[in-house]
Amino acid sequence: MGVERSSPESDAMSDVIFSRRQVADSELPLYRGVSMGEITVVDNPDKARSVRAILLAEAVVGFDTESKPTFRKGEISTGPHLVQLAVERQVYLFPVGCEATHAVLKDVLESRDVIKAGFGLGNDRSALKSRMGIELNNLLDLGEILRGPGHRGTVGAKVAVAHYFGEILLKSKKIGTSNWASRHLDERQMLYAANDAHVALKVYHAWLLDASRKGAISMHSANAQDHS
Image 1 (cartoon, rainbow, N blue to C red):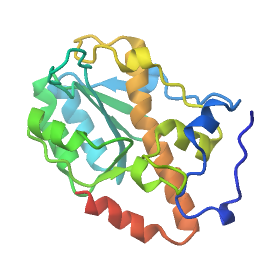
Image 2 (tube, helix red, strand yellow; image 1 turned 120 degrees about the vertical axis):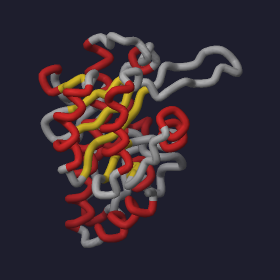
Image 3 (cartoon, one colour; image 1 turned 90 degrees about the vertical axis):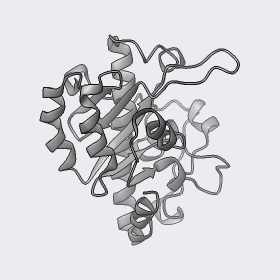
């Protein structure tokens, strides 16, 4: 089936009108994400120092983390194992096992001047605090601010991409539950992780334009600060 969009004038500000079922049943074109040439794995101190200034110069970065899944009852997660930060034309993947890059991650994630925008960030604050001693500041969960009256839970990236771009974001469950603690991520893992962060940045800018056009951006800009 096709998915029909209502006019901007008929939508409440920030309300995403698509449901998960509508998106799953749609025949929208595929979302084309980042390529391998747009991904940098930050796995040594020199790389970390070179990207620090780039990330701290941004007003907002796309943000996500990945963790090796737990399968046994009572097993405690040791994640996150990967932190992803996206700017417009590049995504930086920080393997958490590389402790030499932690200082740069701490500088960026604790910065009150850089918004960290992503989806489903409910556990990231406590996980990063317990694993790396990082206090997340200026965090903006897009899944919360995009939620409309038709959504009981938060809005996911798939629904947001369909709403703003009229495209389908493919997410492989097999890759999403793969071993993110591996010292050598394969190409599929890197693309999956990079797109999680980069699509959040793209959705943020689309939402920002939408909210600004409707004259109600100040309320939600303040919301990002409230999550710090």
